[in-house]
Length: 337
Image (cartoon, rainbow, N blue to C red):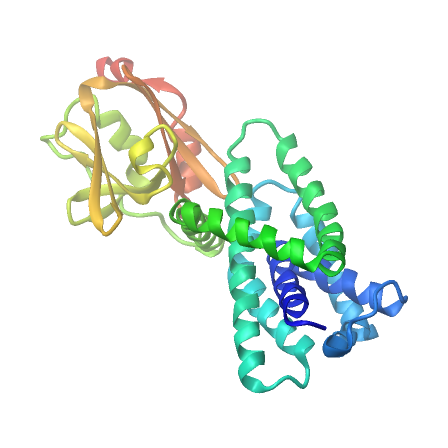
């Protein structure tokens, strides 16, 4: 096997492990076991994937992943858990495949495979998180089925046309490099949301003490403060709601931070490109607010004179309380009452 073909094989395993780790192991193992694919002499160690114990373990995990990947937000939690698992497993599988290669070459190629797995995993996870925000439920399912078909077809393509695969991989990595900041912001949002959601499920006891509304707070902000009080946290700039900006605020889209109450406005504060960024919403511009509960993230929707502004809110133990406290309402009506 020449160098380019070997490189394509190893990086191909890494790429598709980042998309569907267990399907890659199970599919390749079954193909080897039943003679549909014969590894080249330099990759004979891949035959371990055809071992019955490996096939059983991979098959069970593949079935779990197949089901989890079809459910919106559950798929994002699954991806968050596998942010570390897929790259590490891809590197381990590459090292196993290389068998008796010298340690230096094996280490370099294993690290490359893990890196490629991280890029494909990050792209997949960011795409699925974006799709999960879609109001219709079908796009997630269609995309998941497309990935199910993509992996076996892609593995065949890697071994049948290694040079063409390397060319396409180079294009993908170039595009990924350009889009990396946006992708990793989505990954960070997904990972933080998953940790917060899981933590809220296992956190028992009373919610945060309800801080009273400051006397200096604008009357239009008092109803929102009173509704959000169970989830507000003290920050260096006052009490705030831990959340992330959505596409409704383009300058800081998908950035995590705090929506902080100040006397006359709400200020979203985040760090982006190694500096602090803020976005202000004046109290006079807010006309109403609404809370939407979700699997992984809740959403606060502010109706303003300039249009609707939405924030994805990380879950806490107090999140269920807000479902009833934040029914759609008009700020002015609440103030007048």
